[in-house]
Image (cartoon, rainbow, N blue to C red; front, side, top):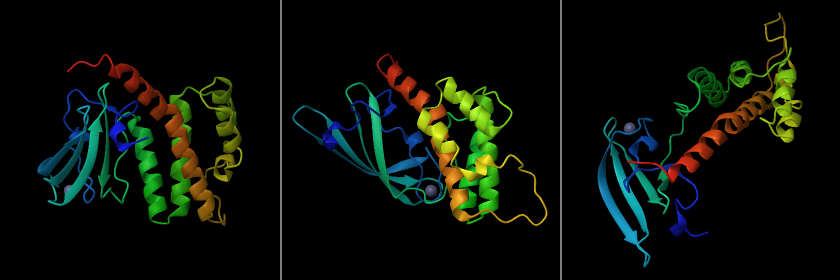
Amino acid sequence: MSWWEIGEGSGHSAYNDELRLDLVDCGFCGESGRFAFESRIIKKNHKGKALRYDTLRCEECGNLTSVFWGTGSSGLQRHYQVPWLKETTKWPTHWPDDVGRFWLQARRSIEGSNWDAAALMARSAVQLVLRHQQATGKSLFEEINDLGKKGVLPPVMVEWAHEVRVLGNDNAHPTPGAAGTAPKDAQAVVEFLGMLLRVTFDLPFQISEHRGSKTAKP
Ligand SMILES: [Zn+2]
């Protein structure tokens, strides 16, 4: 697959052939959507397909971010940027805010090596996702099994859940003298959460964006 096929078959809906600035995050301060163009280059092939090389100046902090992007024939836009944000500061808008907030705190706790906090927040986020998905059951595992039975989660996700130690700890209340969470256990539950969010929120969202793209109106 060549770079000339950028935006063909996958990407974000775009209503015209202009860069969606709301999809670009400043690699320095995380601000999105507020940029001025520093330089713009367009290269077209013989079919008229354009590859775009833009340099954006952040209106918040003044730093530069380069964006390589293009729009496919069905109006989907894909972009790649350098530099990207090294810290997690926000969650996708199609996630529920409560889930996003917990996920953000779990991610930031991992970035700060705060393993107990990461495990606690990730576990709480998993619980919230299960509730948003109307899972039933008396424990986290039962609820995950329930989503497996309903076809929301693929079997491999259900199987994986049973290997994530933090998810099995149904007593999430602190007990005196309890050992701290091991880094690998904290990382495992945060990774599980990330995949769970992809399957339950990202995938349906991306599919609906893609299906809607051919009928999208300006
Ligand atoms: Zn900035």
